[in-house]
Image (tube, rainbow, N blue to C red; front, side, top):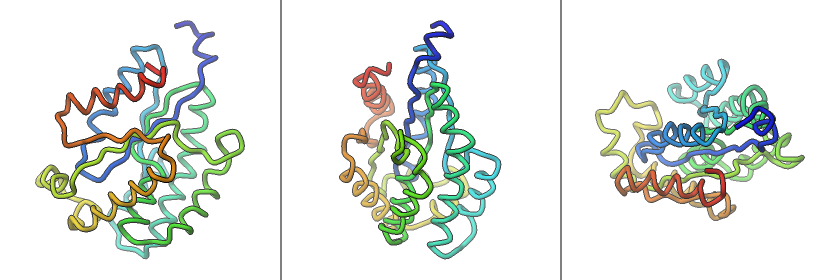
Length: 218
């Protein structure tokens, strides 16, 4: 692909979501390699995090006990920096941005898991993401939602690493998180590719790739 043809490509913002242990992170690098093989420039990033300030806020949010509103505000503060410093510039350059979690995670974890007010989260979303998407809110072009029974997710996580404050929550918390994700998917179903994460790694990868191929991206 020539430099000129790259410059005419539209940027793509693609996100991966799901409860801890669902296995989404395993497929992000594989998808990055598939896009690179197709001649696209790829940026891989994560939330919370993605910038030096965002990584500091990530450490606080994932480890320190705090009020639910404080937790939500930290997530959106990190997100604002991420959008301004990384995501929007990459999209303007026509790159593919693959992000491990984005705003759906805040609605799922803080809204579903913590039971925080959904409408307040929507107000924060509008405030933080209101500069992208041709004057509307910046949302992903596609979100892969990895769905897995919370009990199986906990089994996969057991002994993998020292859990953060979210990973150490009981299965009931993750059931609420999963329900939060499904609520988001029902609100904008066309944006989501729902993946049965209980299948084999190979089958999950085929479903991930197919969702991108069906949209003409690969």
